[in-house]
Image (cartoon, rainbow, N blue to C red; front, side, top):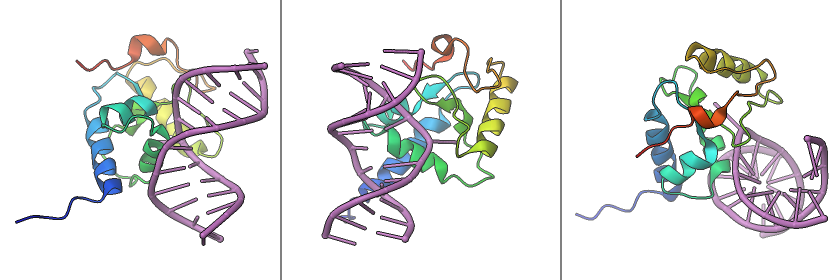
Length: 112
DNA sequence: CGGTTGACCACGT
DNA sequence: AACGTGGCCAACC
């Protein structure tokens, strides 16, 4: 039987979560890239919105998503920014105390 | 219903 | 290299 098509925003959310879940340890990706891989090019901003709503106990590697400029803004999200920097360093990614990632290009996830 | 905000991005000046 | 702008679209007021 025909089931109503999933709500667009819900399928977007699920697609985003699926992509983020696949980011390998020690690699990084950007909001825009997540949107693209999820099949919704140009919706980087909504990716940020989805991630901002993650439950605190999630097992999703949200810390592997950074902005295209290669830094982690602390303004307005100081707690999670510090946590993100700590997790990245734990995966041997160099991040300075201002949140700038060294050599983003070499850490970027390049799915085949 | 319109305006504002936001874990963004590319492009122009 | 620092801003400004337009685009994106869900949530909130």
